[in-house]
Image 1 (cartoon, protein in one colour):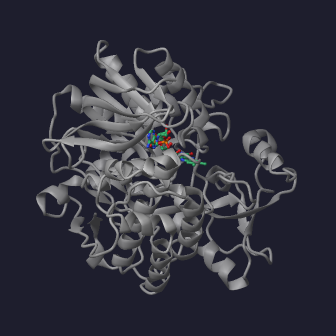
Image 2 (tube, protein in one colour; image 1 turned 30 degrees about the vertical axis):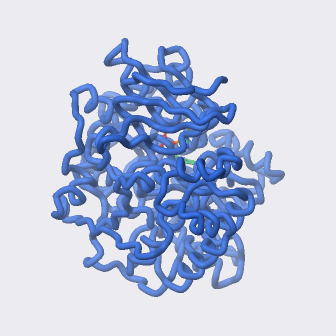
Length: 552
Ligand SMILES: Cc1cc2nc3c(=O)[nH]c(=O)nc-3n(C[C@H](O)[C@H](O)[C@H](O)COP(=O)(O)OP(=O)(O)OC[C@H]3O[C@@H](n4cnc5c(N)ncnc54)[C@H](O)[C@@H]3O)c2cc1C
């Protein structure tokens, strides 16, 4: 693979090759076959969080597919809003539930093989927070692998230009518009990819925490790039922890899918007692588990899968993961603990995926479309990537250039609460470090950052724990150097000029993780209430005064 050098003249470039980036790239080519489309991926094309997704895609497919199982888009909207704890953008959720079924059918057309019963009808799972069984899945709990497979195959067979092993370092902003991205090529060359439209599809930031289900690629690069360019970012205090990650040193932690609890698995404490409604939303279950673990001093609890019919057969990929971790899949009591799983916030977009910077779009986990609010509903994120990446491409095809005051961007641009009453408050971050450039000792910095964030900014937080975490991050060698060198609020390109490129992509990732971690700490400190995934021991209740997004 060679470095892209200076690549110009692209119509649309996608940063990321997960469900959002590849769905978008294929849609551009389907609607405009001659378009020049590029996909930049820091690893190989198939390496993404998407490939790890298990449970499935939530979508109400309609009577033709489901044969009268009593579900509706309105119920999907209601469940998503309930999970989001008052911070969802209602219009964005309606777009998600309304457009979702067609996007799932598109995947089937592309060749995705979802699980079906003997009569060929799609099998649907029920997951926590869903009032009906509506989750389409593949290979039991290998949905993401199937989705990524069909998308990668289709993109490889297309005319898209693919830059694998190329690390996007920063946005190119000229004349108030995004003109593409700077890239560290696979051979270490600093390159530029210029495009009429740039779509951030770079995924989440689970690597901020030492216990996570996210792959190594989830380092918050897109959110950090946006922060460096002054693009609106919000809701980053809402980090979702998945309740049932297998308690085992392997990282990322194998996930024991929510679908298991839908099929009868129950949680038990060290004394074997049940203590929570296993089908409650993730924040409720994770918090109950954390409290139970703190009370007893235990570092894990148990998921009892004894009630799941044919566990090894129906969930063969999970049984294989358990065996691969050296445990006996025939033992029904599996050790579990919550693990960082999903960044609910990100780069704020309107209903078409446009960000506050003209020419820049965001889709998938990197985005804050408003569909997740304070807590993502299970199996809504693959769907969000499918729906909003396609929506962004359609808006680009229509000739849209500038963001509009709709969706999560509505209150940011208009200054008024959105249709559902959610406002926007710009967070004054004071003298604290803003965006950081690449750091010199990435391995040391990342390990210490992960430990500090897990200790003080995890499932439960307080002002004291967040302050202590901030002090720990500021004491890190890379952070201190970057701050002292004046890299605060400067683009990574400046830091590169200062010689920091020696650290390579890992140095950028560490700088990005620091940038996003500081953003999480600042937003979590400012939000003096508990809501959704954000749980403060010093402000344990939800307050109506906090029904707004904190904009960074
Ligand atoms: C274990 C696990 C299970 C899950 N299960 C489900 C589920 O059942 N249902 C569901 O809906 N969701 C699930 N999720 C969440 C879901 O998988 C993700 O939110 C979703 O796949 C994100 O897709 P994406 O396209 O936004 O990003 P990703 O799939 O993470 O892709 C990001 C892409 O960006 C690239 N990238 C990142 N930074 C850079 C950079 N600087 N330069 C170049 N390239 C870059 C990466 O290489 C990658 O190609 C699960 C997640 C995990 C980890």
